[in-house]
Image (cartoon, rainbow, N blue to C red; front, side, top):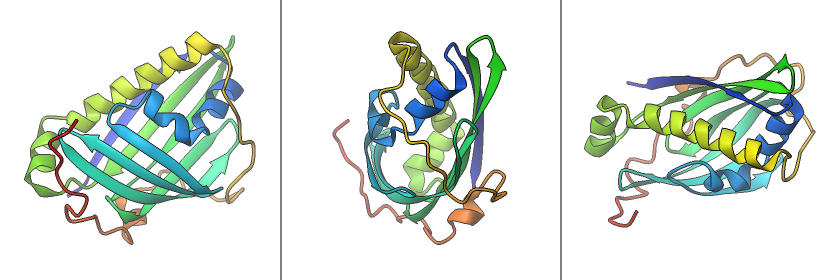
Length: 179
């Protein structure tokens, strides 16, 4: 059974600054707790390694839709089953509303217990707060990718059914005693 997490945060930077920073995927470990690395394989493919609660997970994700200053939608193609979207809304006055919607399938006992304790929900909220601090402290994005992926596509909010090809990693990434 999948779990859906929805979080929203207001950041005090223009929408282009927030979006541009978000597209610097390889910098996610700077503000996302538990994310060990993100490797951009191509314009629309990312490899992730994360460790939350001592459980190490690895997956590859495909960006399904990316529209500058609007959204980035993805679904896992192998490894840990997850999908979602980050949407950016210019609310004026140099402020941006960021909406994160994430759906994932917890695997194994540790993840299922963590799911019941809302670990990922709290992690997502903390990650957005760290992103806010990160981008507001800098005041500018460290880079930008203004290209599009599947322009005009209407994927809406992808769910785990869009990540069905990933079928989880059945714990193959293992449990690590190191945090």
